[in-house]
Image 1 (cartoon, rainbow, N blue to C red):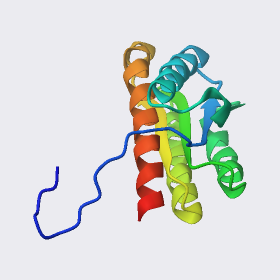
Image 2 (image 1 turned 180 degrees about the horizontal axis):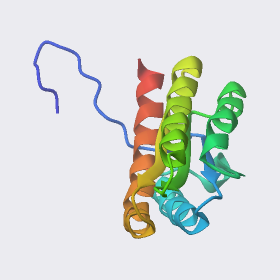
Image 3 (image 1 turned 135 degrees about the horizontal axis):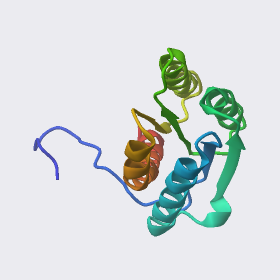
Length: 155
């Protein structure tokens, strides 16, 4: 659906066929992580990504996610990566540190390596908020990873 007649526009490609996707999931807040992962992998499969073209790696917490993503990106084996987890606000400043550092690390890895990363690390005020958002966010991350992998191949 081009918006301008005389300007080339790259349309979104939402087919996951042939794409290799790496997923890094934090085990901290495991129930939310598993919910994100279930929705994410189901959406990847529904868009044509084969299970044999996915790799799931788990890490202790959100702060370990960026380093693991970096190693996966540097391997050259993946068209896109997905970060999953949950950081739930507590009574201390630790929430802000973990949320900000994880997000910043993910962005840095993406920009340094050129491998797109869908950030599905939820940052919520409560467990109930995280549980309520996990299915939708997992699916959104799968869709974003597919679309960005295809876009970067075309640019």
